[in-house]
Length: 376
Image (cartoon, rainbow, N blue to C red; front, top):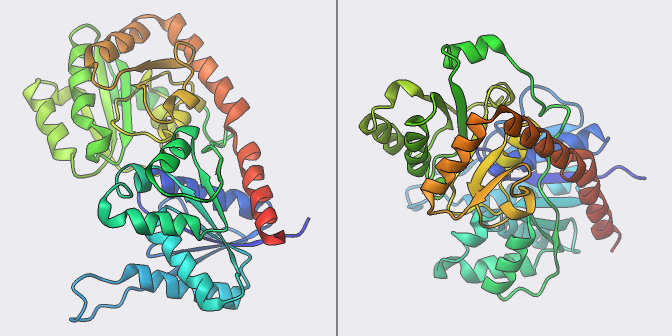
């Protein structure tokens, strides 16, 4: 089968859509396809030289006339430029706005309906940004003018169809994990650093935005810590970091809370964790839950969005109504106090991740979709 030339545009910062876009590109390149990342910075999980991968920086002009930098237009121009000179077959836009809108403009600039535009909806573009009246029309337009559209869960597909006047078929292609990379690798020295007294280890990984509800993470941990000797690893950064720190001090937990900032490599931290806390207000899929499952970490999360499609409740973790902090704490305590239950759920989570959400299987679905678009 012929090799494809694929342009990928995504947010390069810490977050699920950027991670998925970057990991997809890396796997496609390993399969022999030529992959061009087109964005304003190098994606944070794209380090060092990799064969078949190229990066094209979008430079946004600054001019006194522009109150805000015109990123959508600068991106469209760069997408068209790369597509023209590199002969791209597909522009894969991760996020409806601005990426799908920019990809549409680039395709129209080039004419002839090429390259094909595939838009992947990740959630926030629909649940938060897209639901704003000022963005609703352009989100629907960008989706409808794409040659193909995917969503990362059935829940997101349904919500998109309910929210917007969408005429396109939306294919569900789940997020994925590389089980060879994401596997439990115990590190006693690292464990001793954070839990020298044999404390149990809880972990939360996110971009610390309001939708991730890091304040609830601390509140849940406060309940847990009253019953179980434990520490909490807070991995990530964002606008609610200060709130989480303040709550930790108010609960007298400052010495048991570790704020580790953004981490490119989370496997070592997941490998010493006993439970992942994810009390989000929105999760269209929950990539960090999948990564935790692959590392045999049971998940305690909100029952919403795409999480029920990922986490088998009662088998590889627990799903709880998002506002029931006491129930989340109870589930976490049950896991922390029962090593056999913790190991059993960890193994079940690993098995589910490998069987249903492994990279080999999901990347092949994207390949098939690319080829169907190019051949159409």
